[in-house]
Length: 261
Image 1 (tube, helix red, strand yellow):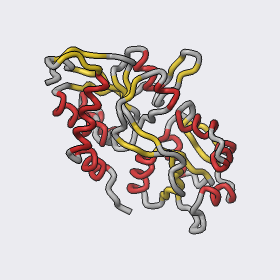
Image 2: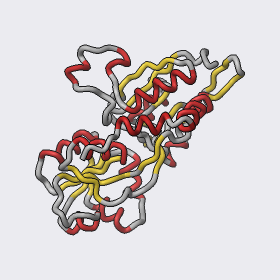
Image 3: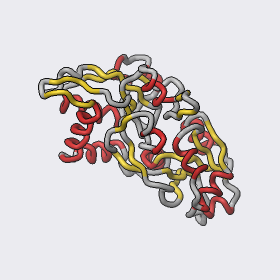
Image 4: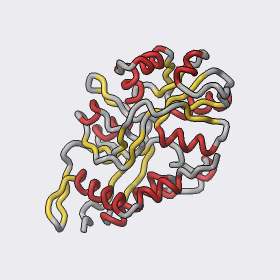
């Protein structure tokens, strides 16, 4: 039905369960280098739309932020024409929708706080702050902007104890191995995965906000098909709705975020 939309170059973030161990990457090529929820979802979209994807990893390991016309991360690669789609736990944020188009969310989540081996009496964000914890957050992304612009008291306190990092893996390794009084801020999907893989990790409190993760693309791009001219966003929305309707997305989430601890 949509065969004219033959090949899309996709940029993905280095994220939970998208990649196998690095030693295996050297023995694989093309899309076979990648595994996880996102690649599986893309395979299902291929079946629905009859299209092919070529996956690349975002060069600077960032989601993307624009400042004075200079855009980083996946958003920047979309705007520079280096990729046609950005697929990850990429938040549909107010500033981003002014720059790129998004599909409807394929998953919902929020910002959560992940700590290692917390004392039994550390159950809330207030507890962490009272015990002198600092917070790690990827710099230049929607999470940092959310915290620094929020007028909620607990968010302001976290923002005042915030240390920015280059990427989530950097913060995750510090939390897991350093023994410092630190917590890392992560999207709910990422936090759940790592908490299921490392039973010493605990998600503290409820998510700080509620967000949707969508597929980003340049504004207004369209293709001609046998059925007429459609915006790419409309075609991808069609695939997401189909996967939600037949429970494909729910089954993939159960596959990649099993409860182990």
